[in-house]
Length: 221
Ligand code: S6P
Ligand code: MG
Image 1 (cartoon, rainbow, N blue to C red):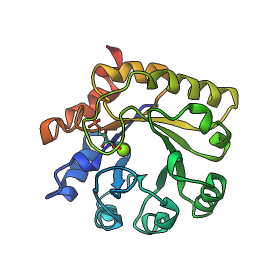
Image 2 (spheres, helix red, strand yellow):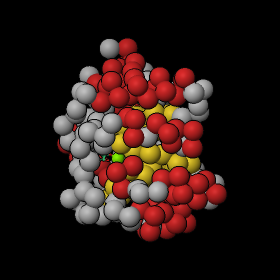
Image 3 (cartoon, protein in one colour):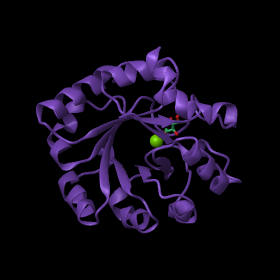
Image 4 (spheres, rainbow, N blue to C red):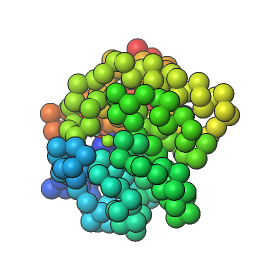
């Protein structure tokens, strides 16, 4: 089942509460919060206070995409602020089993994100421990990054691993998900689509109809 997860960093920060409600009404399935600390990526976005402020505006899941150095130091804050999913970059964790198991004890879902250049075999051993793989289709740090077509084969490989292992792992794709790339990404095996500046928030405006299109007509290109 295709799920659309609007990227909140692309929304209107002066009216996030209203934006969240509009996005939910338009069919969003969960929300994607890009957390950047200026260390792992050369950008700084938002902290747990933003999730806390928005938590009572919707009951949809919040996914905290942690693009930070030493995520183990801040995961608790994001759980307390209402995150339902914590997505960690494999490139930032030295002891993934330990951190993933700690998070599972907190009853949150765990995603592992991989940058475009990170090979899929780096995360293969972790698949039985996690709920989602987030495949970055752009180099992380900013909205509107350039789509890297090589990630399509990575999605296919992950799908094969999940099916072979009969695992319950969803595959998300983040970055450059638009009318052209969406059908290719879904055909390869992605089912969670992050909607940002190339779909739901073109030129900083909000295009609510894109949410329905991402689950409908864009699929049938
Ligand atoms: C990028 C971040 C993403 C962006 C997303 C936006 O570092 O993780 O979630 O917000 O790329 O989508 P788009 O359509 O602008 O690429
Ligand atoms: Mg993201």
